[in-house]
Image (tube, rainbow, N blue to C red; front, side, top):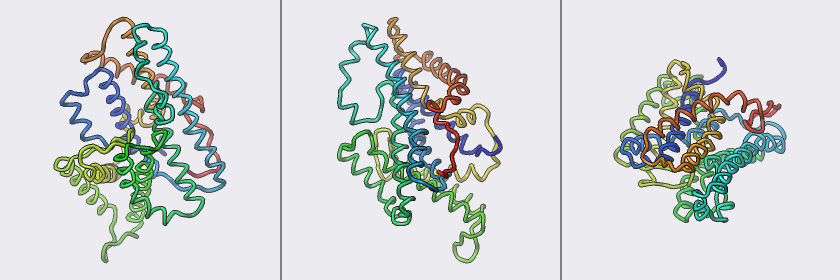
Length: 351
């Protein structure tokens, strides 16, 4: 446990809690609540954090690219297919056997299979496929030694993402969001390099070297820019659908300031482990892939007995507690199965 970065585990745990709350609130028809709208408006950048975190700890690719791809397939693509399949079994099992749920078929279209990477029974799995695709691109760039020209090109990716969104997101399998994913990946990588340079006294603005204290000041300023910018020029980037809501400049700039500023400030503070939240962050994969099939299970069992969830705060609270408890209980079981958790024995390959 001492080797873990408690700051990023904390942020990761908060992101997972936010995601679970988003899906349970939506299931219970409470998205129109004032408090929920405000919470989402100030945490819209949380899904981008996982790309940012991956870039922060990325060390590049050393070795055979084929082995690198094989490793990414095992860690991301296999769990994507496995948990998408599990979610689909739950989903279609209910709507095919419960007469009251058969009208759900009317909303299903074949083009969904190639237009989106969202499984009907486990939509959040889109993230694993987009993450896998981003890793393939970044690994290929590293192997071909095109890091410098590609790093310049990455700055254009938010504009490419916005153009794709305005064009109706034409890329198949939800790959329109990969451009922003790669951008946030490199943002985390650059932020780590900047921090390393400051700690070694190699970062200079004028004569004095910018040390850890300077980065703390910079982080606080970026958080202030985010707070003011999100109030005056609010915009949101929905990575799951590659949607730019309200002000696109606000969405992009505010996301960058929040990710860099919050992570920079927390990294500069004493790193203490927050028991429950850090536990979720340490085992985020289990909570991520398992929570939505549990939502379907809870929802369709209730509907089969004629009980609706819309507007029920008691169901929202109970469903959230059930998800957290079951996921925590199954953590050791799922993590022992590599093809479900993506936790394979490490090879001599840095990624």
